[in-house]
Amino acid sequence: MSHLSHKAPFRCPHCGFVQEEPEHLISTYCHGCGSHYEVRSTSTSRTLSNRFHHALLNRTSRSVALQPGCRIRCYHCGEIHEVSRYARSTFCPFCGAAIDLCDVTISSTTSKPIDTRGNLTITPSGYVCSALTVCGRALVAGRITGTLVCEATLHLACSERLSCQMSARSIIIDNEAHLELTCPIRAVDLTVQGQAAGAFECAGSVWITRSGSIEGRISASAVIVERGGTLLAESSIRPMRDQKSVDQEDDFDVLIAVEHPLPAY
Image (cartoon, rainbow, N blue to C red; front, side, top):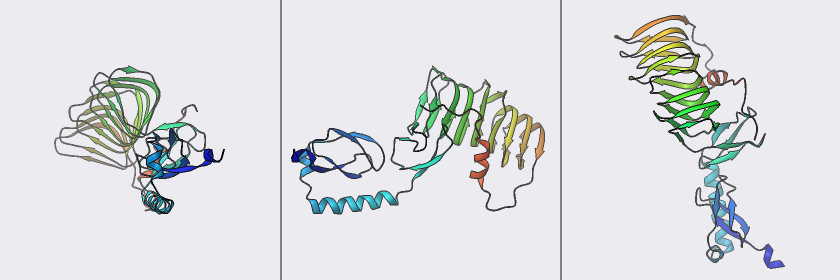
């Protein structure tokens, strides 16, 4: 029975983290990045001497600890935790919800909830009709309804009438886009290169390029219109905050308040 308790070192193929596991292991989850992987032949693992293994384990642990992590917000419970930048998925330690970290491309109609911190791409033939869609960065060249929360940059490159509540740290409206927005969109900063009509709430500035045009209503701290740009909107300009401790992340935290969070699953 004693041979069943023997352990051997196994290296994660994703991040290089080495961990002790039973020598007859078939597959496991990496303790460093959380990725699942199948192990190789145990004979290869046994070739590592104990002294070499401990030195490698200590060196790898230090290198992983020095790598900058990613702060992940769970939209099921609202809590924030940190994961390795090498991770492909994670579980919220507060509510246990699964969070994807991979890129997603939509080229057809889907109503499946999307909750990823990777890049979301909606092609011209794609249509997302989900109550809440969460992503890291997004390129929307098709259609989307419901609520979209983009933690980084949202690039709108479609010519549609969108019925979607959109929030992002930065929103760019492409120079060939012609948008009619039925719901207010919220951002820290907004850059308009094409044509858009709707309500825009910005914690920072609105930049209208020489090919850009906005109609509707604007609330921002500053509005910049290049020569050739068009602004036909009711504008509410608020003064910039004086406190240096208040940064864009704080402004974005206010923008992404979700009235109906994702259900835990």
